[in-house]
Length: 542
Image (spheres, helix red, strand yellow):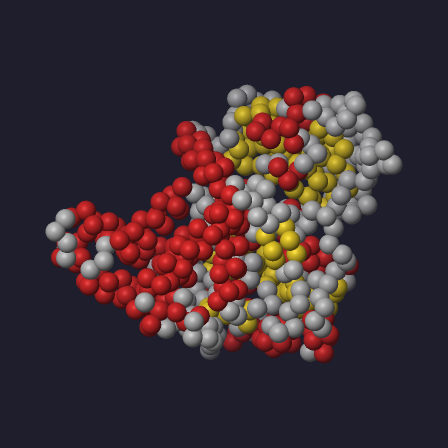
């Protein structure tokens, strides 16, 4: 069959082509959003999403009135009117729509005010935060202080256009599925001719990220910051955007936390919830996707790279007329579901594929050279995304996971607090980063912030940890400013503690004093806290 299809004398190119195109088809085919074998309420809710006649679901004002839609915006005067126009019906039905003005200079806030929407303006971004994460965190704090008690939070970008008539059914289904976090694929509007030629490029991206899998795995998943729907309890439980404050790919980082917390992460793989125009020019397209590729590298696996090379080799390296026609048909069939794409894009798919290779190489070289990332007129230094380190760590991770026979859970209980004010930030380090302990939480395995809400005891749970030595450090953020306060000589003035009873002698506690074992024995280690009488106990379960 393969030989007939590609017209080759040798079966090797035929097999490569067949394997590549089948893989592309499989990764581009949308998986069911619910179990087809179960006649559950999910089917009814999704039918409501597909039908414009389902008013009793889409007009569910009780759910919509408990929804906050948060829009971080920095110099988005050109995009904001279209987005806000699409959200007017949601606001009329009771949704709380908040535009978070991130120090804009183009009248972004005034546009939102004039259209009748709520606006909050961020304070200047602190050191160690990405701009978008700071804006999202500030927006949520604004809503809490304003008395918002709803149970759903939708973070979206200014370059989107939504279909609010579907929100009621979507929220009902999301709750029925017990989702903690959901992302959704966009429909690409593509008003310009060059954009409509990029269908094959977008399909390769979807294949790499496994975006059509509605129930993804922690090893390979899709998440996009243009649509992040949270159950509020989960968002607060993980510390919100504070937990990813320095991440530029906050969408992927938040999804990863969802997996690590054993909560349900959902990818809504249809494209009927919102549309977008991500980039207005080809130059922006190249620069934007170069940035996206760089940020996505740490979340990729060796399997992802192998599949990508296989697909590109199949559609470019086995060139015959039958294989070309068959590949064109595949792109035509699948790109129509993702937005307004042209037949010419499929006919000239090698251009799109070559552009994908070009951007990938640029991203890899920029990463190796540790070039900073420019985003919204802000420059971010990237020092931990070395391509070689990434590949080696991916191989090590794959080897480690294959060798693991059981999953390990660590429960860290912070207790002994003098008050229930503010929150607790806890960082968990592994042996590979012992030199960073505890002063550089960016290099920790996990950095989690939780509001105390009046409690004097709180648990932190870390799942699926590999065997090894770990050390944790926690401090009591009593004033809620989400940083550890120090006196004039740099000594913490807020309560803190470390595992294994590690003491602060002439500097921060050492990893060697604070370490404990995971997966090798069962133990409960008590940790003392000097300044505010905080104690941390660690219980290992596997």
